[in-house]
Image: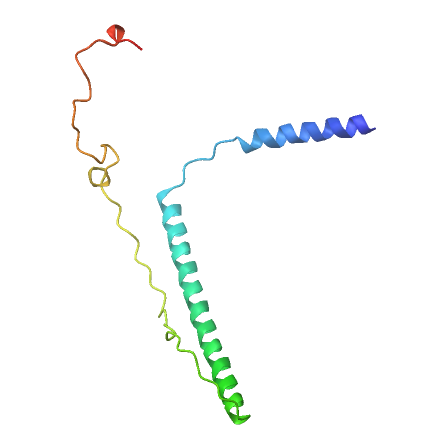
Length: 126
């Protein structure tokens, strides 16, 4: 019985490993654009959440200071940066660069030597 369970576990591992190596089709430009917009919306949502958190922390600090002063304690507030409102969500997709401007086909540095020599490969020493 134990041997059968081990054999079954090995077979399932091999099956899952073979499916993990499968190639996925390339992502379309439309799917990339949607993913970029979703990432921008998520980043904006994070900024809105941070803004609301900042406002709530300011309210808690103000309440604490009022109650501490009412109780007769000498409390000095700590200076903090003001909360910044991220504003409404707006997304402008980045314009694709032409291949020539992207630098994908050439090295970034200026060539100092020619790319090849007149010496045949068979004549060079390894």
